[in-house]
Structure formats: structure tokens, C-alpha cells
Length: 283
Length: 283
Picture 1 (cartoon, rainbow over the protein chains, first blue to last red):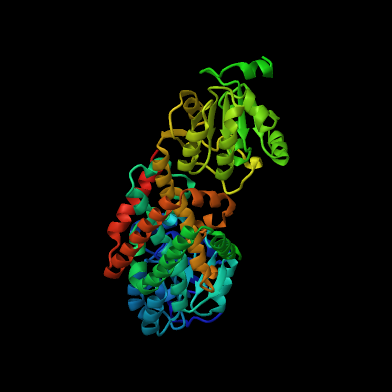
Picture 2: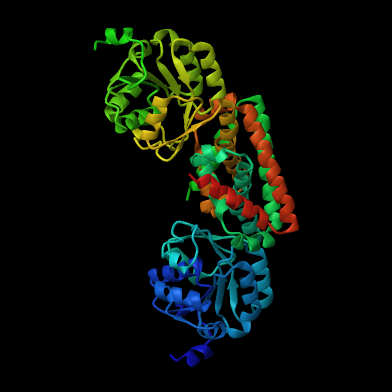
């Protein structure tokens, strides 16, 4: 089928033939590799800067590169793996470019603003918000892995049989969750840990000599403090209310620990925390 | 030389011939293995419960096992690697058992109370407080490693040429520090991270469904929450003032982050935290 014939055809349910990944970094590249490993035999198009698509082609993550309009016109699935603010911009412009019924999904770390924007802008296509709870400390398509999502949760904000099937084949656990619930929960499980690590590194850094006695605990808990701000800027600006709520709950818990510490006997706290930490590790 | 002849001989400076490890768990066992690997050719005696000495003998960490009095009478170095409260008890009884000049050191995680107790009780022997900033999540002599202290700080509360030499040969970095300064700093770098992890696990655990979206950050930062309370009880009871001060400083930093988050723009905080986290990693 020619690109023109494909462009005129409405996307039907069933197998995808052409998938476009917009933003071929660590996540976009890993999605492409995972999709291929899961058995996808169609074409994977990358939409990114010239430098990134070169790296993605070298990594074998994409088959071809082209501009968004051209890619969108022939895709059955469009995967937006850009920073959140860029995803919002892409949602503003993509709908006129796609064929009716094209599935559009994203990998942004917050969901409320993205899903709200999509519900306003996506008319011809269908949008399903997504968030793979996976990552690495290093970024870029050179670090992409076909197994990055394996054994990790992959949140979708609504159901789509084919997308769910593909994600399951990648070894991830599909979790269906409303955008607001997702943002409230990741504020606790992801954004709060980042801010804790930032605050701890600063607290330790304020004390001269502390680095001389830094053991594994200090190193483990300040690792996230090395994260670049660029990837957090959009998360903070799109989820500040839930993050503030998480910070307040955490500070309250710390104040309770202070009180219990003065009285002596943190057994109860340790038992509850250990139970919660084990629950987090249960699949 | 017979045990009797050795017992009558005052310990001179120079090479140790007999070393006793009291409490042959992960740390005591690793010290014994590290000492051996560092070239120590003398005898290593283990003083522990029958079950533990059996495991220590099997692991090859010690040459013989005997009761404290018998071991103390022939040792040039006595290494106390028990829980803090047991170290305090051993310090109450050990001095009459040792030959004049015997070096006694410990591996307790807090130093002020231990060094204070030793300064009251140790007369015939010489006491140098110690704390290897190393560990593993699993305990016991079966987990002991000759390289456990490698590239880690090893705090001593006063100088001793032969002990420092031995520790350096184990690959550790000797850090000389007063007990109060040590306790203030480990409150920040070790005890605070533990309580943060405990509080975070509880905070996340309070929110139903949070475990469904737990990514690497949540898992990393709640790992310490799995620590058994037994190893923390003595640390909290012997360092509560410094720990409370560390908690207060950390909560203040979190409140500052909340304020900055509301205004927007955490670049400055991220830059400072990243710099501090890098300093912690500098050797």
C-alpha cells in the first residue's frame, strides 16, 4: 500500500502497520525497541531533532525519520515521548494531521493537564494518556532498552485493547487509572522522593565534614539529587498541588517520628514502614 | 610462646600476634577476613554465641572460639563488634581481663556514649573508638566480606598508628573525628536517611493504590524502611539529641522547598543539591 493509499484509509481496529514515535529519547526509543521485540513487524518512524533521529537510526530503534505532519498522516499509532510541555504543544497541532481513528498516546510523567488538553484538541484521533513507570539515570536513545518497561507498572488513563496488549507483550503491568488519581499517587511515589533527595543533599551539604562519613544510606538517598532540573520543571509546573499535599503529609509523619523518638520506642513506626515497603515491592 | 607466657607479657607496640573479635557478625566477621587479607598472620579468636562461632569457623573468619576472659587475656587487639548496648556492657567488664596496654576498639554506630564509658572503665587497656561506615542489607557472618570496608570511611575517635595502618591496608579511609562530631554527622548521613525512608514508606503506605505506580524512586528510597528495628534501637537511644536536630534541619529544608515550589522555579535548589550530592561522592 502506498503512503497515499494508507493516508486515505481510516484506521481500523486490529493490527497496527505504522507507528510513529515523537521524541526518540530514552523512553521513546525503548518503546520502539520493546514494540519490535514484542513482535511488531510494521514500520517505526521517528520524529525528533536531526541529531536524535541519527542516534535512533544508529541504535536501530526506528526504521525511518520524517517530519511530524508526514509521519502523522500514515500512522496507526502515534507515541508522544517528549517532555510534558512539548507534548502539550504537539497535542495543539497534531489532530488535523492524523487520519480519523488514529490512536495517540503519550509517556508524560503527569497526566491531568495532558489528558485535559487532549480532550479539547483531539477530535479525529483517539487519545489515551500513558505513563510507563520506568527510567534510568542516564538519558537519550543510546541508553534505550527493549526491556526498560519489563515488570514495571504502565499507567493508562483509559482502556484500549490493542495498546494494552502491546504493553503487556513488553512485559509491563497495565494499570488503568484516572489522570487525577495518577497525579496524586505519583506525587507520593515519584515527585516526593525526588524532593526528599534534593532536600537531604542540601541538608547534608550544609554541614561541613558530613561527606567524610557518608555511607551507603547517604549515597543511596541522595542519588536522585543528581537529576537534572530540566526533566522536573514541567512535572512541578503541572502537578504542584498534589506535590504540596504529599510534602505536607510527609512532614507530618516526620514530626510524629520526632515525638515518638523523644518518648523512645519507634518499633511501631518501623513495623508499619516495613510492611508498607514490602507492599510496594509486591507485584 | 605458650598462652601463659603470652598472658604475662605486656603488649608492646609493633605487630599484633593475637586478635579477638567479640561479636562475630557481619562487621566483626568482615573485620577478621579483611585483617587476614591485609596480611595478618597471627591468631584470630572469636567470642560469640555457640551458634555464631560455629558459623564464623565455617566461614573461615576465625581460627578459634573461646570465652571473653580467656580470649582477652591473650589478645593484643580486642575488636568489639556487638550491638551498642552490648559494647557498653563489655566495656564494664573487660578491663580486668586484659593485659596492660592491650588495644581495645569497637565498631559501634554511635560514639559519644561508648567513648565516655570506655574513658571511665578502661584503665589497663587503651581504648580507641571506631566506626566503619559500611554495611549490607543482610546480616550475619555468612555475609561477611574481606572487602566490606574497601573505599569506605572508617572513623576513629583517636589516633593509633598500628590500627590506622591495618585499616588502611583493608582499603578503607581512616577519618579521625571526635565522638560528638561523629555522632552529629552520622545523625545527618545515616540516622536521618533511615528515618526518612521509614517516614516515606509510611506516607506512601497510607495512600491506597500507591504501590500500583511505585517506580524505581519509591523503591530506592523505601529500601532502608525494611531494616530491622533491633539494629536501630541502640542508635536512637544513644544519639537522640543529634537525630532530633537533623530532623529539624531537614524539615526546615522541606518547608523551604514547599515555598519555592509555590513560587515556581526550583532550579537553585536542584543546583545546590546536585553540588552537595557530588561532594558526598568525592573521595
